[in-house]
Image (cartoon, rainbow, N blue to C red; front, side):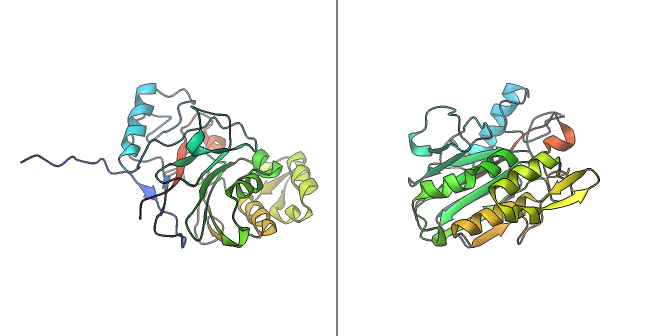
Length: 254
């Protein structure tokens, strides 16, 4: 009798949202990988000077839970959105989408806001990397546009990001957001000579403006802060040299 293959257990966060059953989504944490400090331990970023073999091993551990290799992209804090099913290796992009089965869209973060999107019928999914620059410049809007479904049919899940009590920014950042949308002023709280920025609230404002009202995850029905939750999350602002987590979404076979 052949022995069963042992699957290395990883600690995931599964989005708490009413997505269709064939829409699969996972959020990794920093736990259960093989990378050594300061990348300990499930670092999935190949661009942060971690040992390449460790990163490859971590990605292989992740593959046990996925139907195919994630479509990794080179994130540049922009607004480019690619079709993951037609992607070439490591394209410059900050969001991807797909209508094809078993194509895994992914974004990597360590304080930036990951946004997962799907429609209620389960025909299209998207993963968005919303650092403050991309969020300000419209990466969420670009991803929703590419999905080509009515925004009222879209569900959004906001993953772990640096929280509103930890993300200190200068006045110039606040001014850029308010220049794009006056209501963004509600997402900033004075903090000495600087401001505390609520990325979750800005993302919700942007989604609502598009007509997306079904919003879940951080800032809504789940409590995440990459900066303060050192046990579960990587944080670039906190540690500078650190790993990256992945937010993944795909359409599975019925």
